[in-house]
Length: 606
Ligand code: F6P
Picture 1 (cartoon, rainbow, N blue to C red):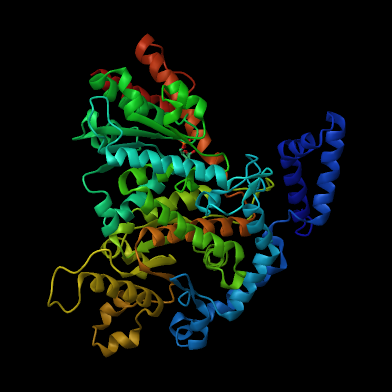
Picture 2 (cartoon, helix red, strand yellow):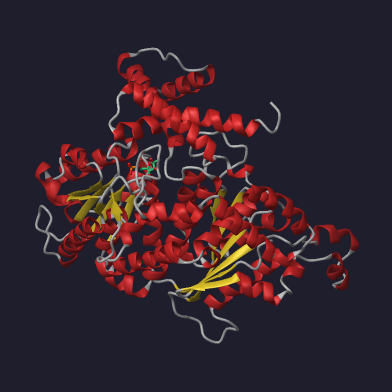
């Protein structure tokens, strides 16, 4: 295939791949029969191919221009770029108290212009609008993507399939408000007449990581801490019996409320844990106790009922909320409201909405999630950095990186375009992180002198906690923030041979003590860490991930990649059970799996 024909072939084959479900669905909507459906599909493929609407972004002029521009950037060093005040001014942005400093990115004015051109080429603005307009942009699951509606004010109108979804969102929020109030005030009593002071939230993935992130961020915030006095919130995610033991340790059934959180209500680990904890409850309090001690959050209210939970004790959400984007639905709001009161959670939703509103309306050049997303695309696709470190200088944000790992990696780790065309470029990034300064004493060595890993530094101006020690040179929080400022500069400036010579470093140590610098990072500075700013931070990342996916031309809202492992586990489950109960020999596995599985089963009987 000659290079000129390759994109066309790729495009056509992708469209043909794609035609099966997407076009059939569209034709079905038009109410046409099988034959004319086929004709319709073919003509649509032609029209779409002609309009080049589905061409890969890497074939655009804007992408090509950025590739060429890399040469210019390679001729720069952040040491010099940071001397240019005009450039820095252009790259430090602020919205609603959130400061985002992009001046330590390896970009100049021209890079931003070119990235905005790429955004235009990728039809980014239209894609943002389509999301807020409730279009079914998650095409492989035929769903809208409206997690932003979960935090919309009561009077906002967000339509999906011809209906404003905001009233139904608020119906659930009002129900949570009243239920959490009953539990917290003690007007809802357990089976033995005691108030329920402890909550165990059972769920995994998006039904766990977001709520855990927010819980960790709220825990030490004074208003939240006061509201949570005398209450405990635990999470049970892993199917590992160790996690069950850890989650239930020291809890009493008669004072515990269990919240089963599962969008599908079919996730194997969650359902097994739910059955385990139901037995824990009923063995102590009898089966009648379930209605007082167990509630559920799900989109599958039928299965919730079949599980034995009173529909009145179920909190619904909708298929237009992706699992990893569900923390602002009852998934997060219910457990968090039980622990911290609905008022605090409402402020968190308001913070997230502040960024959503900015995201949908601000011009792209001043739009924080857009600029953040473009920086990531630039680093991943043009500067060849496939990893990103998320480094909050705030212990309360300890669970930010694990949450963003799912939001980002499950969304953008894809191999084909939204039309099913295999991608000639990598998408997504490897996210990891730890709060500073702990991370500095762990993996920063690699970031400073080993591989280039773009870093997100997140700092807080006013700590959640006041100062204990007086008379020190700086307070604990100031000390923490000294490191926040220093690390970004250490990465950018590095340390030269000349500087080391001036310090009289022995010649043989100079190569070891040199820092190349020119390692990019960005800094996000929040005024404080309150429910409101936690919401802002969440929405910044969620929307940023969407921007990256839209530029790369992928579907950031499905997750087919998690299915294969799940179904293979089902096969192992069946055979493990048959081997144990009927002594049936294992079959159909490869040599390695058979050997290990046999060893495992033998070990159990010894
Ligand atoms: O395995 C991945 C996943 O499907 C996630 O996308 C989701 O957040 C998680 O499992 C849990 O799913 P559910 O809420 O349906 O139990």
